[in-house]
Image 1 (cartoon, rainbow over the protein chains, first blue to last red):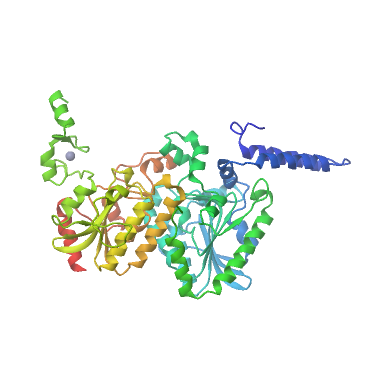
Image 2: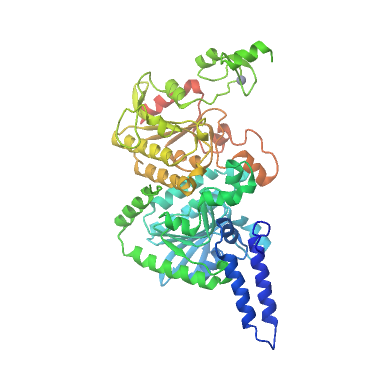
Length: 312
Length: 250
Ligand SMILES: [Zn+2]
């Protein structure tokens, strides 16, 4: 159990969960001591958690996804479809929603689904150019009617397949980033899981950036980094430490504005708690941003973008 | 290959074309602007060579990224050799020229590269001169972690601030990842050299995604023109003339 290298961290956590289930099924005995013991084991497991282990949590299939956050935070989400140019990409979902009586536009990567078929349908949140163009179209809609935009980032990266290339993946990402940088309405971005490279950045910036503790925002996956730089994919743990992409890393770097702490073991152990905390911060940020006039909003955003440099 | 030829290649008098394998006298290749006289293959060239064959002779004045103003500075190349930029003229038409060099760190965009790009954009705006960027890159410099990625946003944002300044991108082989997916593809006119590979994902990544080999010309410039993403493919021999026409038009 102490040998973290040979056993997957998530597997140990799952074993603990099974143990808890078995304990819960016990009747006629006082299980409080047992339950405390399991909780103690879990806390031991998570103490001094490595960045690589945080990535495992960020990628866990049990983790709450964009859909869960949308359902938990907004009332009356109405999904809309299509990029008005070529197609509809289910990897990025978006639509109209209401938050505290304020109409907003919501855009997010749909990485998590209930079953395998849906995962495939939404392509694990890996967007095609049509997905990026849908995001652009929705941002334009928000701008036109002066509605704030809230994005949820959860993607291994933009889809790196031949169809995506023939439809202009790089061009669509550049235009999407450009929209986020220039849109004349508040943008709040929530980094909830894996946030990989240009595909994440496409909707991964805003006037306020909120990030979950174990989410991982990075230019490249640790596996990719390891294979390019160390010429061997087995150094992903070392790569994760070089990439420094966890919530705490990015908060320290000044890129992220608010960090949402996760319960022991990760967001999936108490999704309601995490979604509730995120909701509170979004509401707070929204109020703040709506009180700023557009010129000031854009000026502050420009300053925020220009200062995206390592602090010496 | 014979031993004599081998020695001649080693000391640089002869060069083998990577495309048609023809062995060419290096001097001939140079006179032909590093285009294979046999098959038309465009060799990858350093930014100094690119500046030499594109700009009017002795017109190039390097810009320093830190000062944000025109400072001729011989040392600036040391800061980040990926990008060399300055004020120059093409057929007598003044413009700001930036050239990325794939042979240095795979042309990757790090923080200093982005600083240089942004500085060129600001100079283009300050001097009201068009901006010509030759882009060749493996993408974001991943060694710089999240900061590398964020330079995509910084350069895109900087481009928005010079929107009324004409910007021309010339894609040269190869241009992939975070450079194509940021400032490079937000130009007013987009040109590529023949056969240049341009896209988001590299072919190795694409092939591992789909588990089969993609055709070698899948991401080349000609394909991108036919799909509507680039304006034209221009032979290196005609590049100066084409750029001059566009600069004059603006
Ligand atoms: Zn040849």
